[in-house]
Image 1 (tube, rainbow, N blue to C red):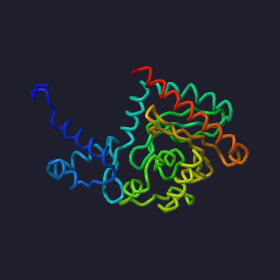
Image 2: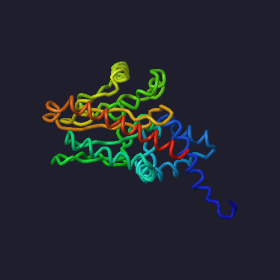
Image 3: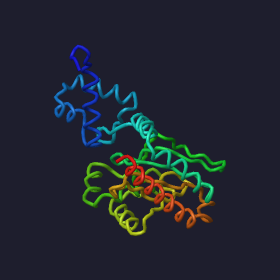
Image 4: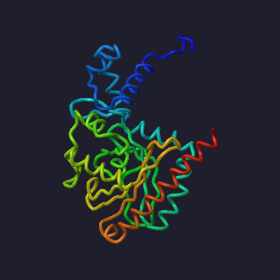
Length: 257
């Protein structure tokens, strides 16, 4: 493209987004300034603007990660492809079986980004919506996707971060989180009880692509009264749904090859 039509400010913003996508929660203002060779004054203005727009968020320790606005764009982008089409079709069948809400999410750094939701006919409505982010360690949807990593990678992800205590039941110890993840690798699912929101319980399972790589997760969410009655059924059904979606991902890939 001709330099006549090039916008340097947009290019700088793109460099920031690219770096934070690769290494979320690791860079402060001074780090970004040095790494990208942008003076501190310009970087300060750029980060403030991106933060105000929700493109990035400032973490504890004054480091930065991608923000919920980009999650919303990501959801819109993925909506063009077959995974979301498959989700809405298959999740509706599973909701009919269990009559609880199902969510689809993807992992970004140490956060899960919600991509889609299929509601049940319950009067209880979840506050999470496509595009929103939540700490992965506090959700079944996030934890099940952490199972793709060896423990060394998880230690690296959380090396400079505390495990935020969202509720009194949230896991805040990395060794406890590791044990939960190791167990779920064996069972193929993970449960979370009131760690993300008081009174809510979840069961999640992983979705794999044609290469056998874990790429997304799906989860049932319900109230305590429903959990006591439907826990086992929800676990079985969410695993079936994840398997069907994994099959769709494999078939979709082979169709386009």
